[in-house]
Length: 355
Image 1: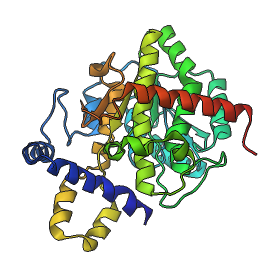
Image 2 (image 1 turned 90 degrees about the vertical axis):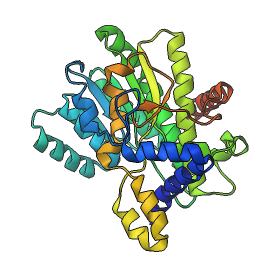
Image 3 (image 1 turned 60 degrees about the vertical axis):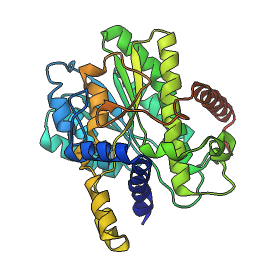
């Protein structure tokens, strides 16, 4: 049931936002449906297999990538395709048995794949610290960090750190993970000459959030709760994180980039089951906008591996092409304020763990 509430707002938001300008709606929708390619040479119909196959010959050997949320969906496909291209894959997972099944599938397809499983709960600061310590103790380089895992909660829940679970997982967890691994990425890039790449998986739903509803304190512990709003706020925070970290990395001349991506709305069985609840015409329109899982993973894989992405940082991508995000997501002051408050919160919580 949760998946229904998670995915349908995406579909309706795309339809709503497109309708605001009828001419733009027709042009963009036809372009999307036809899979017309953009400046990158790819479009909505491009798959992760395709965009990475075109990178062959440009992909350095012995790359190492961490992919969160790789036990299902887009994350699993991202891990599969990167492993197929020779990238060592680190899968952080809360459910190691589920992760083991994913690893088994990767090795079945590619016996030479190098896949390492480590435990993590992205809603827990302590768990993230343990994961990072364990990973760093392996002595491996780190070239790619894909912050893909996503949590949607229909009801108000709190993490062990007493923070709303969606914000804790989708934003704060990935923020801390990135912070704790950043120096390893900078070091790897300096030693190997290979540019490090961080990818924050966001969503078009970030554009739903208005300035008045984006209050850090209230997102930590909301008085009134709406699952879709909480999810949208976390995805806006993912973009602002990418914007501010990109600025900081450029300032220190580090050879590491960070970008945010919208993967698209991916086909799931739950959407087909929901057909009886909505009109046939709306279902037809919405279903045309859905992507396969491989198409959904394409933009993540493109930003992680494509030579066209060399030096590109602090941008927002969809369908493997740069897109405009909301005005709030582009606000440098908001990005800095969110960064500062997040750093202060994490520093405070790590020094004084929640009881």
